[in-house]
Amino acid sequence: MSFDTWISFFILCWGMSASPGPAQLASISWSLACGWKRCIPQAFGLGCGVFVLVMIVGLGIGAVLAASPKLFALIRGAGCAYLVWIGITQLRSKAGAVVMPENGTMVPTAESAPWKMWWRGFLVNVSNPKGLVFFLSLLTPFLNQASPVLPQYAIMGLTCCFTDFVIMNVVAYLAWELSKKLRSARTMRVLNRIFGVIFILIGVGLFFFNV
Image (tube, rainbow, N blue to C red; front, side, top):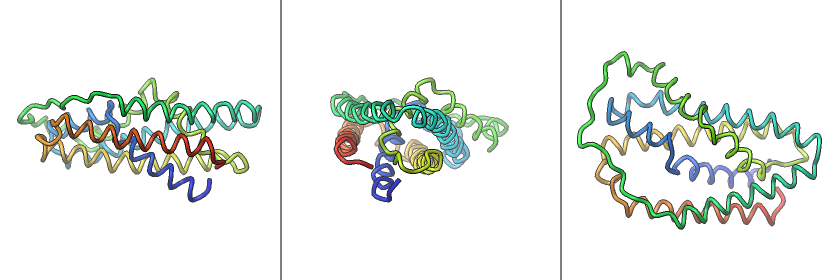
């Protein structure tokens, strides 16, 4: 994987991590329940869950690449199309306001122990039934067929882990400090438009330029 390709993937990761989903809901709900600082281990657990999913996909893609380069090319093309489809979906989505209670109720200390928070976050992402299919379609276009596959997936996994960790901490902090801002439907629509354009541009670029 070239540095330019990694930069494109790094930008994409911010969009993936910031897109609404179970991880964001977990970060918001537990931040309101026990405070954003106690959610830092959970954010790390969410990132670790993503890394595990990426490596599972990497093991499978390596086998496909070795068995059939044509099939690999087909999957790569489908991945580019999927990126564009995600972008279009983001652009067309009608985001609503995020509804949250005015005040969070503190949970018992035992429930917010760091290892429990980490495990809770890890399970949220690693148990997502759509995760493997999502990464299978999304990550393949970034691979360089002339280089070993698993190291590239390890780089992508660590990159996803990092952006997930940062974004989930930001989400938890904003949920705790700026809940009124997060409720704005207009803010969610603007974010959807920005990340929708990013998905489309990267998908089209990867289709026409070899990585």
